[in-house]
Structures are given as structure tokens and as C-alpha cells.
Length: 236
Picture (tube, rainbow, N blue to C red):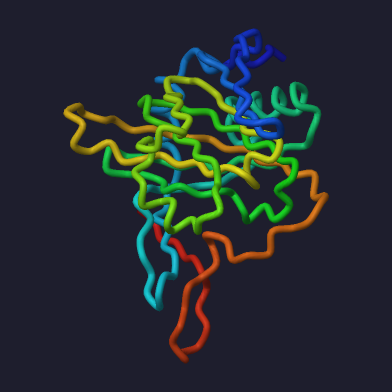
């Protein structure tokens, strides 16, 4: 039986950015050499869904599309999954995907607190398509809602990366405990922004003190009506 084509560059150099003493980000440029072909396969071949979150007693549509599947479904995600396990020596879970259809789609500043145990995590993101800003902001003593009023990338202390076209980034250590990350909208910047797909794998060592605060996926409901799910989805 012939071996499958290798869709990733396992020799692509990895550059580590130390955000602080306990949080870091690895950047691997050109990790998926045939990124344009892989992007077209996923955009056209996935049953994308429109997520909605319960906010103040009504469902609000997310400004992006999503999907999830077993890594074995596609050769690319299977190869990435095997590479991540070998490179980082932990059993990543995946894969979830987000489709940013154009520059109007975005993801606000947040941490992946639904993982609960945040003292030692790995979140790997393979980015296909358009290069866009990926903003990391250190969590301060303020509430997230207050911090988010400063535009993403507008704080001089923000760390701004521009992954795309087959790059991979991996956030690690206490990054989800001490930092937030997001993808700001690109409208109004004077350029046409095409589609972007991010493929995400996650791992936590499930040690330390769990984060028990409500996560992004928990509903915000204040009426006396029957409780409703915090999220729901529908076909795009």
C-alpha cells in the first residue's frame, strides 16, 4: 500500500516567544506547504454551522462559523495530530475548526477557560488562508469586559502575531490562565480580506486549581423563564 502524501513540513523551524516566565507561544511558519489547496478542501467540504450563545436572555449569533471532527477524517488533520503528539509528548484532543469568511468575522479577547485546568495547557492552531492579526494580551486585575474595551492590538503591551498561509502557533504553559487572545475584525483597513480557517487542538494536564467561573459557553440568563442551553447551533 503506498504511503500517503506528506502534507506538513515537519522540518519547518519553530520560534518560541516567551510571553513571561511561565507562558509561551511557538510559531512555525510554512508548516502546511500546500495551504491554499487544503483551505479550499475544508471550506467546500465541511458542514459548517453557525453558533449562537445565550446572552442576556436571547441568543446572539457568533460572527464566524465552526465545525468539529475526528482528526482521522482528513489526511492533513491526521498528520498534524501525529506530529503534535510526537513534538510535545502530550495527547492532544482535536480537532475543532473556525471559518472566518471575510474581514467582518472576528473572535473577541478571551481565554479557553472551558478547559478548566489552566496552569499547564497546550493549544495548537494551524492557520490556512488569509493572514490576520492574532492578538495576545496579558490578563490584568481588571474584568475581561473592561479590558476588551481597548481595541485588540491597540494596547502597547499587546503581542501581535500574523499567522496564515499554513503557519502553526502553539500556546503553552499558563497562557490560558494569565493571557487572553483574539482575532480582531479587519473591516475598514483598506484591503480585501479573504477566508481563513483555523484548526485547533487542545490539551491540559488537569492539575492545579480548576477555573470554576462561567466560561464563554455558559449562558447569561436573568429572567425567571425555564433555563436554556448556553449555546446552540444551526447549519450555515
